[in-house]
Image 1 (cartoon, one colour):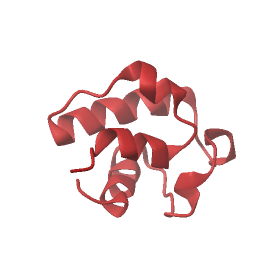
Image 2 (cartoon, helix red, strand yellow):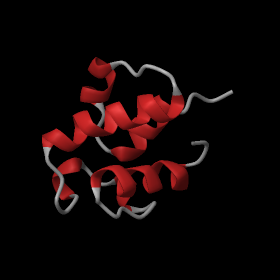
Image 3 (spheres, one colour):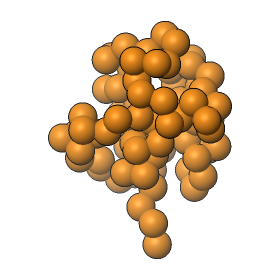
Image 4 (tube, one colour):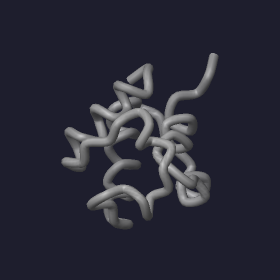
Length: 76
């Protein structure tokens, strides 16, 4: 998982939610079908896919999916 598109494909596969790149910047409240259980499921899916842990406290501070992507895929 290297790009935002890869991340959003994971969101769709794991959570069944189709989100466009533009939608990734929307707050969670604005995402159709989003609920808090999705957040925990997404963290687990990202950790399995990347092999890296993500700080749950930082994820809980994220305002949208794009911010979670930024946490999940560190910049080199």
